[in-house]
Image (cartoon, rainbow over all chains, first blue to last red; front, side, top):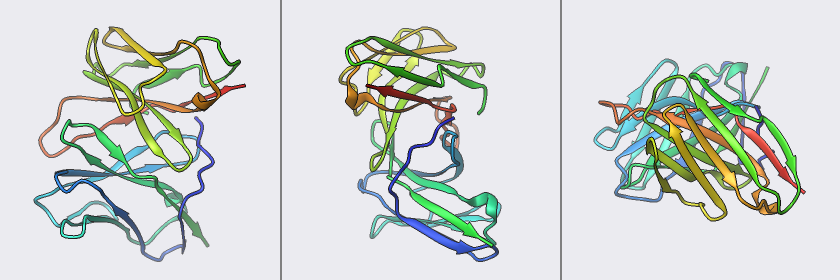
Length: 111
Length: 115
């Protein structure tokens, strides 16, 4: 696979710390949101999703928070590990059921 | 990569030549998508298919056409490649909207360079 050399916002965290990746979405009518992880040379991989009738959803080591008032989404990763290093995208489902992706944030984990 | 393959994985071609990228799935999913990924733009939808011979345009469809003659194959064609179509192309698949989940599974990508 191939990855694109993206000039992205970068978050650098130390192994074991918690990471928070933020995303602003555009459409107040969007009712479904997804976080994807893209490792170097691979396609995006689903992490976690949340519907607009929820404020929070938890998975394994990940939590997504949704603030509809300010159209903001965040992904929290607990006890960040080197394997979490990747580019993270948020995506919203528009009113035609298509995914609209954000531009992504690069997470770098250092020992 | 959830039973999705893309071919070729890398291609270099000259401006003005036709190019066809292939996506093949073994999951029997109804929906298939083609995206391009460029710096500063994230992933953008080119075309998608909601069944055999049923396709529709996405956000950046100009200069591209698609065909789906079988459930498992979705072809993306650049009739006359331009340098602006240099990109990484991803195929994705999904089933219908599931209760509480809407997942698209992505292939490994094809890097296309138009010189």
